[in-house]
Structure formats: C-alpha cells, structure tokens
Image (cartoon, rainbow over all chains, first blue to last red; front, side, top):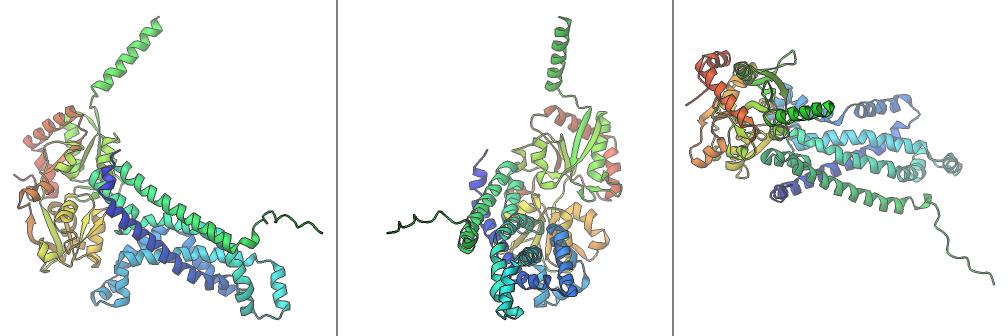
Length: 243
Length: 263
C-alpha cells in the first residue's frame, strides 16, 4: 500500500468531501421541506389528491437514482429546444447545463419521494386517542395537523429519516457519473492517474465511513432530544422514604 | 508408489506450466467505447481497428484471441491483476504508464486535437481557452495534457468516463470544446452525422517541448505485464510480420484513407 497516493491528492479528496456534503445537505433540506406538505396530501381522504402524490413517489422510488440523474443530465440535454434556451442564455434553463444543479435536482426529487412516504406513514400511525382528544377540544383540521399530528409524526419519523439521509450520503456517489468531482469522483481521478485502485477507493470509503458515523451520532442526539418521551423510563431516583 | 510418482509428475507438469506460460490463448482487453478503434457491435461483439489488429496478431502467432471488454479507467489495474494478458485499446505509450506495465512497439500514432463548432475561434492553446470548458476522457493522454498545461490556469477541464459522453456534452453545448486523439475524433465523430458541424480547430498537437511530448507519449502500443517479456517479444515479431506482409495496411484502410502509422 502506497500512502503517498493519498497524501499527494489530499486536497482533491477534501474538496470532494465538501462537494458531497453540500450536495447531500441541500438536497435533503429541499426534499424535506417539500415532503412535509406532500405527506399531508398523501394522507388526504381525497383519492385524487393522495393518488397524484402516490404516482410521484411511486415513480421516484421505483426507478434507480442513477437513471433519474442520467435522464436529467444527458436525457434532457438531447432536446434541441433546451439547447436553444442555453444558446439564448435563458437564466432558468441555463441551470440544467450545470452538472451540480442536475445532481441536486435528481437527489432532491428522489429523497423527497422517500421522505414523503416516511412522514405519511408516520402520520397514519399517530395514536387515534390523540386525534379524538383534539377533535373533542374542537380543533379544526389545520390546527389538528399543526398542533398534534405533525409534531408527533415528525418526531416518530426521525429514526427512519436518519436511514434515508445515510442512504442519500452513500447514494450521492453517483454524482461522479455526471462529471462532478465528489468523494468518488476524486477517487476515480486518483485511480486513473496512479493506477492504484486499492488506495484510491479505500480512502474514499474511509471518508464515507467517517461521515456516516458523524450522521449516526448526530441523529442519536436528535432522538434523545425529541423522542425522550418515547424512551423507556430510566430507573427513577431513589424514593424519598416517608417520614 | 506408482500413485506418488503420478502426483509428482503431475506437480512437475503444473510447475513447468507456470514457469513458461504458453501463449496458445491470449486474453486481449479493449474498451468498446472508442470508435472506430474499438466499439461494441449490434451483435454485442467487440469490433474495430484495435480488435482487427489483435486478431491479425493472434492469427500470426497461431494463438486464440479471447476478447475482454474493460472500462477505460480500470484497464491497467485489471491487466496487472491478471484479468487479461494484453491491452489493445488505443493506449498511448507514456512514461507514467511504463512504470506499471510494458508496451510493444507502436501500432499507430495519433496527435491530439481540439474539436469544436466549425468556425469557432478556439485554438488548442492556453490563451485561447481561458474561460472555456474543455471535455476530455479521464485517464487519457488528452486528460494528462489538459490537466498539466491548462487546468487551474483559467480553463475548466471536465473529465468523462467515456469518450462519447464528452461528445454528447459537446453536442448539447455544455462543453465549448473537446480535447481528444486526432484519429479517434476523425473516424469516430467528425465523419459521423453527429459531428458534421464540428471540426479540428488550430493545429494538431504533437507536443512542441520535450515536456509536452513526454505527456503525449510515444505512439500507441499494446500493453503487457512487465514479467511477460516473452509475450511482448512474440507480439513485436507478429506486429513486424503483419506490417511487412500487407495485413496491417489492409486493416487500416478499412477505417482510414490516410496512413495512421506515422513516422
């Protein structure tokens, strides 16, 4: 094992890790922001509304993220119309020329679909008693959502959502398929220059491992904070002997 | 006792076999994404000039060619790890690669060239390319050249896993130019419908300084593992033979009107 392969290219790995991190962070943030209203629609009693959102999540959960990314990056660019917009420097469509935006869009749409189903599932599992109690208090549906269902559902969704984020972190390695130099892209560059696949990919794996553990730790803290009321009660302080 | 003798004989046979591998079967690897030198035909088989040359060499050596398709950026590691015995995939002979593998004599040579929309003022020079995006295939001599002389000096060098991905992005307008092997561009892009409004801009790049020439390398050869000197010698002999008996010319004329062997 030749460690100089890694030390000589440390800067490339660091900038790759930075790109991976903000791709995952921004796409998950956008995905989550969009997933909350979509989840509300997904649990709607109106079949047309919930069905429409269902078609979206079905499509994005039923196809690989790599295919979605290639479709957005290479697929759309094939159309003359889009190429003409680029020629005319149309600011909105120009975004589709950038590999970073294409990856962000594919990742956000993908994670949003999964997150929608996670939150919708969690909303369906809010105990009936809580809802009945809220109704008995005379809460309207929006108030019920805001005060009771969403806070409870979002908290309960944290463990499943942490898995989604970790899968996104690892799934983001496909960004290198559209010329982005993320952690995997850096490893591929190093590999093709030094012909040392073991060193190049082992170090990339190590970075992913560290990032994954950091995420797991952060989510454990979040669970301790927001799900404290669901955790088994710690042994109570010794009872004060009665006088 | 006779059993023991049999095992001893078998063991001996095996160890002899290991020491002097006979090359009755040669596993040849190519990329299959670099027309007209190597590509995957509609029947799924590999074909192209590299494949024809490989088959001609096998015929000359009375050996059986087994073709293996291998992604470009894993070529050399896969050769070293014995997944196949030779790389015949339009690979330029460079000092960097020679540290890991050995090469036969060249079987053709290609300068580099800048491809962009016909009539564009771009030239393969740092000053001309400032602020532009140039696509290259990762791990090729074009990549090495662009990385060394242009990248980080105002030119954005974008690396693709496959050559045709770079052409796709050139065609859609994502790239201002592609920097490629001249003959590959000539036979694989410019002469095809997709490439009709593109051309080679400025001079072909042969390398003006010793430093540039070191990056571009010394012709295109067949890579073998360093310890397979016997295979290298056999391939060199076969290469000289097909050059002499006209087979080489017959093959190259299928793809190119001009001479691609070079000086």
